[in-house]
Image 1 (tube, helix red, strand yellow):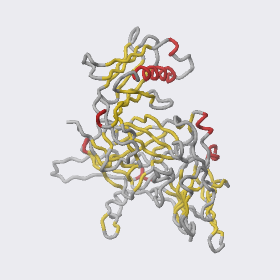
Image 2 (spheres, one colour):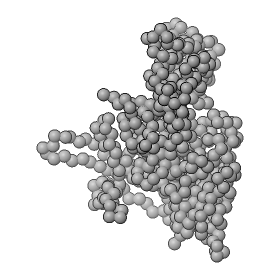
Image 3 (cartoon, rainbow, N blue to C red):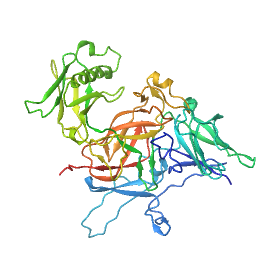
Image 4 (tube, rainbow, N blue to C red):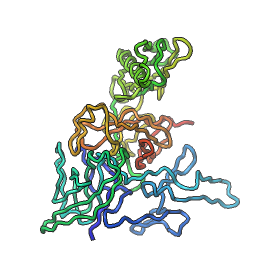
Length: 476
């Protein structure tokens, strides 16, 4: 019997923008006549630990990672999506135990439904006898084919662009045309080498406007994120928040603020910077941000630029590449022209740090530094803005719009249980369906080769991935 499943992405190719082959997400749905329901999972059941090749693989429902900073153990469901929220757990200690263990809630929580697909998402269809042989789109293709090795994939009758097909897996893109739909019908049609034409049974696929998935690789959960070091230069970030009020001053200080040699760059908010009634406060903050960027770019050691098209953050970068730029101190302050300041400036770290090699993979041997800005690669973030970018976001075609673009729905991130500042996100020029998300790790993260990270849009949370992190200055 021919079977097929569909799932969220699990890996990305850095060089071609195509998904890596033969990778699989833990969440999938069956594209056959009926979809079996999943029974509730519980660690109190009669299930025993799973084995593979005679080797104990641990608990069949959850995997555990240590959180040394809080002296706790984090449990994460092996099953992706909402079904993992039903796993019950408890702890027991002996009567004379000196170490007390407490549970945080009765069930696992936080898993989203991975089979809800956003327009433009790269999806994988997993099954058997999907094709007679392996084929992939040319790595330099600017338009993806709608048929490979006799295989076609249809979503509500629309032929989907194909990245790769094999007897066991198909990688395709959900057409952007389904944006206004709540669900589509999907099936696979294959012309085999002997002339047989076989079509799978149709399966209903829920459609949402956004549902992020992070590319990752490997089999052990949490899988290693497809993440890279974002810069060969030491970096820092100043966040501009609050609102613009004429007469307020915003100052970024390069160097030790207590030293006479510190260089101060002060922008005074003008009346024309205050947005008219009805416009968002962000409009005024962007003007303050841009004013600071212009001033800071006069500095001999540091240059500045906006973190993103709509982000009210200033990214600082050492002018010299490599570790020589690490350690340049910076800070920020604001003062009110009359009364308290309405604009708020926050330096996210105390000094520029973490120069690496831009584009180098984040690995256990080359980990991210706590406080570093890294890039993770994702799909499923939905429609982008501004309109110029939206017009270039086409089904199955290389994105050729502006580099500065962002999803309509805000992207947030958690790494190691702490907020990671999302500095920019958007479609990557030269790729099809792949987004980059630049995020700054919290500087207080402990060293952990499997720091758990997610991104989210609204209530839709991505798969959990592992990011190796090293903290050279752990908190005492």
